[in-house]
Amino acid sequence: MINKVRLILLIIITVTMKGLTVEKLYQTIPKEIMGWKAEEKDEFYDRETLHEYINGGAELYLTYDFKQAFARRFVKPNAPEIILEIYEMNSSKDAFGVFSSERQDEEVGIGQDSEYGGGLLRFWKDKYFVSILVIGDEKVAKAAILELGKRVADVIPSIGKKPEIIKCLPKENLVENRIRFFHTHSILNRQYFLASENILNLNRQTDCVIAPYQIGKQKSYLLLLQYETQSKAEAAYQSFLQNYMPEASESGVAKMENDKWTMAKLRQELLMIVVEAPDEKWASQLLSTVKFELGVLESF
Image 1 (cartoon, rainbow, N blue to C red):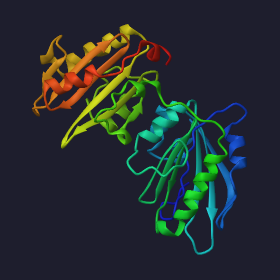
Image 2 (image 1 turned 45 degrees about the horizontal axis):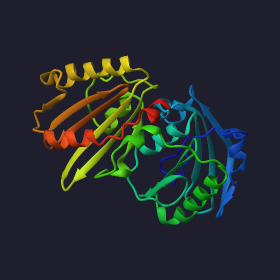
Image 3 (image 1 turned 45 degrees about the vertical axis):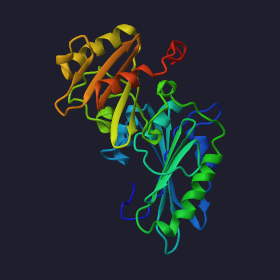
């Protein structure tokens, strides 16, 4: 269990590669890093026991198809404690999803995408997500955190693919480090609260992305949702109109109570929604530039 009074190095990695499982991976991670040495027995957690380790935080990983986790504790005389964790996921897109869910700091060049700020290093590579958390004087262990992060990334031999649906996002005015990939209603509401009920009929098979677009002080959000079938997308579209913007009827566009505009369009299995648009024209232009490619969508 993580002692939150101490310095914590939290590494969460999500991957299943040919010939490489989390059990094999942890054996290749160094047991000593810049004077910090591994202490006690390594710990493992699965879908049934993860909540015992991350009380109240396990749901995030479970919605991204988590498989198992590993933890290792490092200590050094007169220095904060470091705890290494590895979380294995079923796909690289879900590793990216976990990383994207809370991304906010600057890239530091570790793994495929990374960030470090406020004593926290996070990155993902292939099917692994990595997070290093420092509680206490981060200056004491920052160098060790970054070095251990590099060493962990180095032992993951493969590169994973980002979710294909991200390719559909228009590039102009996109705030790229705020792209969030997810599957479920609960994770959507962590990023942008839409409704208490699951009015978009989301589940773990739905690939979704939400991203902000900004011009000056104006910020709007584009939500793309890829359903398993066209009929499921149509049902979600109708549910959204009825529950979120009933005044829109079949037009799919409405001015909301906050004087912002919402617009929704459906293209086969892809539901596209703009919220917080400054006007109808802005919403329409953003939706018109979505890079809809049937071949990409069918490859999910």
